[in-house]
Structures are given as structure tokens and as C-alpha cells.
Image (cartoon, rainbow, N blue to C red; front, side, top):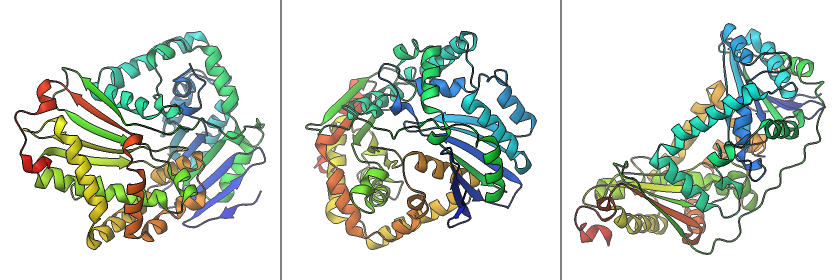
Length: 443
């Protein structure tokens, strides 16, 4: 197997069974991060079985043919390490952080549960209750979480991103041992995984250990993922929620926007232009939206936005405000829409544009200086079918952007018909405000 050397001390190779391996050398401290990413997440679930990807993540700690339930984490802790896992729409990741001389231990343990998971109702049923309680605590007991979940569901007419990662409670309640093992056997295989090892190692060390522990696991001939696409969105949608527990009203708007993988396949540097555009428009206290609504008009106490581009298919672009009295939620739509259109028409100043580019590049470089952040960035990107070159060249593509590109992508994707507006309130006053807002602010 040939080791391919990339930039910034990064190497990659693939085992004969299809396991892709990325090594990030960082010899500043004798520690390593071992991350095993499976290219399967909540968006790959069978209809009616929502939450099975996340539920299986929990069950992967419940024992194998070699280890008792919980023993994996106990072994890692006894060796001075940490371990955990997380599930997204497009991937599931299991990781360990250990001293560098314990890398083989991490590989041995992860290789074991790639094939050796054993489940009984004795461990599965209580864990299902744990997941349902997690949903209750994180979502069902929080009005803002319920509202955002409903908004996201409304944004996607057909695509599975509209289903929450943790699943719908009534479907979680019916998940069983057969469901978990079927999902495990279908998706957990070396040819559906990427191993990322960062830290005080060499590619040659990682290759030798990966071949020893993962090399004999047979491939399962995993086929590329195929998902339904969104039909054309012909009208905007609105999700209003009243809950007396809400003390501070929120106004949110999400637009359906392609992920970095899709956007850049359509037109080079579209995703980077969107990221920079959202930073300038709504990213922090110097952004256009914040200065306009919070500082100058004093119509809101907060304003911001997001575009998290690392995904297989879509990556919603979001804007939000929290109105300031006497303004209510009813004033926010016009204020935000006018502010966005003003930004698209006039653009940022040359100074603000260059400052934003420098900030994004600097933040990326700082993140790459942390082995865990770097491993996570690469693992997530590769699990969403981005190339390693695309991930590593991101700062250079940001630097190459021209001002017209960020305005072009906003004009293209700020589409009212492809949007969902949400208003979360606890009283009628939150909607209307305490009195009429100043006319000059809303015109």
C-alpha cells in the first residue's frame, strides 16, 4: 500500500478492504486522537425507523463478543484516555484520545466493535429509555428546540434532513434489537469508514497498526449513498409557536442552500463565497445585520446568522433576531429583509471585505493547529464526500474570492420561496410589541 504525502504533515492511504486512512502528524506532545468515521448518519435511516443511527451509537458501547457492556470506555479511562461518539445527518464518529504509545489499544478496541457487537434486550431496552429521556431533556422540554425542529422539518419537503437526528419519540419507542443489528450489519464495514489519526505518530506506524487490526476485516461492498432530492420550492412557509414558557421572543429565517460539496460542483468557490457572505452579513457584532438592527436602529438585542456547509446535500442558511422593546416579532421580517437587500445592493466596504477574509483564514489556521479540531474537520468533510484536497485548500480559496462573488451567491440563494420563517413567542405582546415601533425604523 502506497502512502500519499499531502501538505501540512498530512498523509493518506487505503487498505485493501476499502478502509481509508488519514494521518495528521503533530509531534509537539506525546498524545494521539484516533477517530473512526462511518459514512452513515440519520439521513440514511429507513423510513419509520428515525433515530436508529443515534441509538446504535449508544449501543456500540454496550459490549462485544470480547468485552462486557461499558468495558471499552473503562479500558480507555484506565489508560488515561477519553472516548466518546457523536452522530450527524451524514456520519457517525467514534473517537479516543490517548498517550501516543496507546494508539494500538485504540485500534484494537475499535476494530473489535466494528464486527463484534452483541446486543441483548437486557442492555438495549434500558438504553432506549435513556435515548428517549435525552430527547425529552434536549428537545421536548425546550420551546426553542421544539420550534427549531419544526422549522427544519418544514424546510425539507422530501429530503431526510427534515427528520431530527435523535428521531421522533414515537418511532424511537418502537426501535428494537433487530432494527439495531440490521443497521449495524448494513453500514458498519471498513469500506464505509474513514480512520483519522492525529498526533505524535508517523504514517508508517499507522499503516502497520491499521493493517494488523483492521486489515483482516472483510469489505461489505457498500454502495454509494443515494437520497431523494428536494422538489422545487414554490412558496415560502411560516412556523409560529406560542409557549408561555418563552420569556424572550425569537425570529428565525432559514433558506434552502446546497452544501459545500454540491455548491462547488455547480460552480467553483460557491460554498466559500456563501460562508464569507454570511460572515459579513450576519456573523458577529461587526456584521451588517447586527450593526443595522442592534446598533443603529436599536430594534433588536441580538442578530446573527449561520451557514454550516459541511454536509452531503443541503446546508441551510439561517438568520435570526431577538426584538428589543417596543418592537415585536411582527416588525422583524420587514426589517431583516430590507437589511439583507441593502447589503446585496451596496455590498461591504473594501476594508470590511478584506478583514472578513483575513478573519476566516486565521480562524481556519488556528483550528488546524489543534489535532482534534483538524481530525474532526477532515473526518467530517471526507464523510460528506468532499475530497481531501478541497478540505486542505479551503483557506486559499477564501483568499481568492472577489467581492462580486459573495453578492452573487446571496442574490442567487436568498429566495423567498425556498425559505421558512419562524416566530417563537410567549405572549401576544411578543408578536406586536409594547407599542407602535418608530416608523423610520420599519420603512
